[in-house]
Image (cartoon, rainbow, N blue to C red; front, side, top):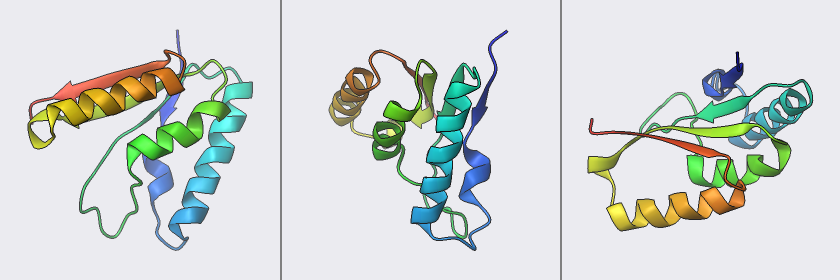
Amino acid sequence: MHIGFHLTPFWSPTDRSPTQIIDEAIEVVRAASTMGYAWVSMGQHWLTYPTIWPQPYPLIARLAPETGNMQIKRSVLVLPLLKPVEVAEKVSSQDHVTHGRLVLGVAIG
């Protein structure tokens, strides 16, 4: 069995700054990598007021060095809302940044 976690709970409540929320997520991911967790995942939401959801591309790049051997799961991209070439380029770059540990989820809606 492989156990991991999704970062959704970190994005609220919003009584903290976005910087503080991201810093806390980094610390949790760093600790989880030393405790044997197999993966961490993060999603993307637009217009999420009042919660704060950072863009996943830069967040994954920032978290990658903290994850050790954990897989980094990029939760569902809604492909029809995005430019295909841009998605391919960003995901390919992330795959290299994570040393092949990126797992991508996609959907049509």
